[in-house]
Length: 311
Figure 1 (cartoon, rainbow, N blue to C red):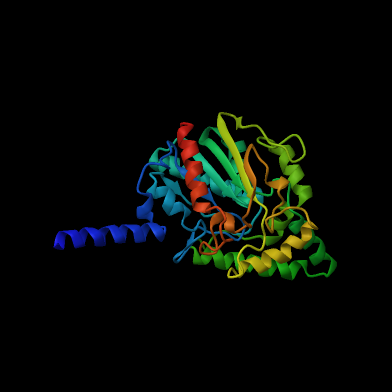
Figure 2: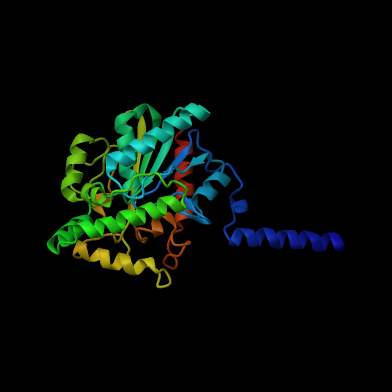
């Protein structure tokens, strides 16, 4: 009788962990890729601040599925090439320290631009690139903010405040010396500068409007995904900000910060997930629309795709 009760309690505990999404529920080799997975954050991003992880629940689920996962820390706010150089330096350090030869790079938002820069500078380090709602064509939000702040003569103070916020984020996440430059972030995210960047670093970009790019380049697999929802959960305070920024799109499909077609790069896995820009990395604390796909499951499934491709 005692043994039966203990077994029942153990089974209940296991079920409870699974329902809570605990890492124990993912103790397998489903996500065990050959090369490490590198999760690259976007603007105003970080690796971890206290208990908060930018890739909330994603990094831990991938590790519990057998993957080796790294989360580099880039400037919260800075230009594309500055952040790309920061990422490249950290990948070279990981190679020197652990002997990794190649990496599966996953970039969210501006993180996807940093990943593309690394591919251009050191393609030998790249096994695959996956961008998630990266503004490859720029974003009307940057265009609008640049225009509006200039029109009202507040560009200097506005970008100074944002740069200070970036400094606070980097300080709290343990990287206080990273340089911050909000003005360059918004400039590099504009549609005009994005076109210049794409002309200089064209690998993976579609050649037709809203089309797909090549599935491979320089021996690396290329993928992208994106969402087209904005207000997804009334309990999520960040949704209200995304509702405001989505007004710059004038009705075109977007996730609050990036347009549907702008997210296209390489093989488009899907460009209309019912997620907004923060749902795509499972923020805030996993809040998203009811009955919508689980972002954690998306990254787990993609890691398995990479594994089956020998990556």
